[in-house]
Image (tube, rainbow, N blue to C red):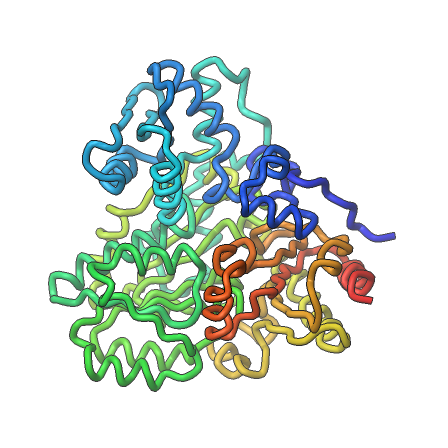
Length: 502
């Protein structure tokens, strides 16, 4: 009997108040979620925290609105006063005002007239940079205000959480010390802080150009597109395998380039550039290299020797139970600007809320065991999918196009992470709806998860001819399915896929 039971639409994955995923069990529910169909959205109990405002934040924002008499206004609760100020400036002069409360742990936010334009702009900005208040911080504030009797019980680390997470994380970054690791409230905030720090350092040298290598996660792309000095300072090189265009660009404009950002491997194509060659190019031209190993985890790939900064999500793999959002930026002590990078990143980063860090500290010790179990299953799932006549293409860390490059940075040939992307020869609707695996965003959990990734990340592109053409020009099938293998029995994962495919 399969270990997989159907998960109703909108139910949290896992069944935890602070879960980072939720069930979207049919393609109709995915489309309804993206199109803000009330018939779908009212069934959501939660969602990925940077995309769906957590119910606890909604409850607290409503209470703040009542207390301040803010009828007809939208209230956004932010992770700090600094983020509130940044958001107010982003919305423009006279549009928003800032809320600051210093009692208790402090509450900060932004208020503006409720309009679709301002609501969308504010939410997108907070999503891109990881600026939302933590759901656990909101929970504690609701308790302090007498609106909840107590925080929901959960296993939590009782000692020094910072020291424990550092102790568990340092083996993934040989040569680093605790001073080189800066924790963030999310992986995206780590990306943002690294971007801001490098932009300051390199901007003083007249370097303002940023290069995106390959197709990156949507919010990383957004930071590079929206926060560079001008549209001419953002360059996207599509092919991660051909470094020739990059070399020519650096020969021509190298003195103007601040940084290069690459994922290793990329999301969702799971492609790996030649990292030693990329690092050599960057160093030769004085360009800072930012590498993100989130797709397979820093425990699977060793990137610090090549990067100036490694940025990573700790929501994936290290918080493998799926109920913490956190990240880290790790500075390479050998970088010429290491001291300035540490100071700059620390200044720009949004710290992890203490209870989130304590929950992470309670889980992070399982990382190696969880990864080992996942990585034993991945090659078998890949072999099954590759041999099925309904499957058109299967992408993973050791795909022939990436294998050689990936093995240059992999900790072992078995260190392949959890992610498999694949496309079918026909429509995906019937397959997706029949499939008994958990369906929702995120990856790197003990629980297997699958989603039509482009529908969730780039629905505006998937639903427009010009968007689909742009995706295809980047080698991305708009119907691509992203599978994150969990720790369930391999035969059950394959059995569920076989039943839906046959």
